[in-house]
Image: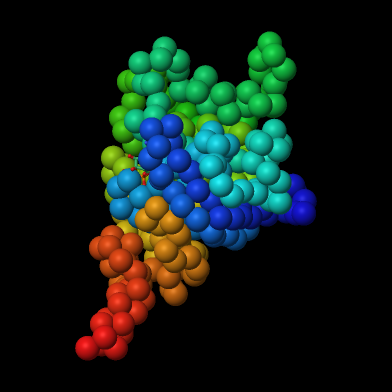
Length: 260
Ligand SMILES: Nc1ncnc2c1ncn2[C@@H]1O[C@H](COP(=O)(O)OP(=O)(O)OP(=O)(O)O)[C@@H](O)[C@H]1O
């Protein structure tokens, strides 16, 4: 078992997830997110990326298989505050009357008692996290009054305040301008340097090879996973976005050749 002070990996072992409407969102998924890496999670709409994030966070109960974070089952990893999560924008109630400072303070709740009275350390970490994403000046704003990019940065600050060794980001660059995306990527690279393990889903395929050490390709199951150089290939992308695995297509054509 890994220690909580070192970098942590995520192991996904034969994971299947079925929603209550009987929709099978993921089946027999196997992969490892290596400790201390930035790993890109790539797949088309509806391929199961958010489902995988929510399973790693312990928000969804798998119908089969298991996930471990730093060697711990997800519920134990949650209790130890090992993971921090930046959700997709549409999963947040932007009308909820709360300002940016208090959203980021939510990242500290797991360290507080039931009365949730922030300590000096909690306040300091919230301010530092806001500073890191360049959002200090917006701390008194209601979250609903932020732009798309500012909302993403506020939630990234919440994840930083939580001090999770593993950071999961579900499409953090959607609706973000090029300059802000570049700044966020720089910050992710700093966090990797500081020993965080980062799993990030994105539809911005052009940026993957600029900052992801490793890539996981997903379409209801893991189709390929490994270093970005080996995995993020045209062939693999065609398989992920276009339908059947190239290998199975080859196998099929060999079969039909044999049948002729
Ligand atoms: N709460 C739910 N109840 C039932 N089915 C769901 C639910 N959430 C997602 N699904 C289905 O599970 C599958 C995977 O969805 P998921 O949101 O994980 O995909 P995604 O890769 O994150 O998609 P996108 O790129 O569009 O965000 C889809 O077919 C989706 O319709």
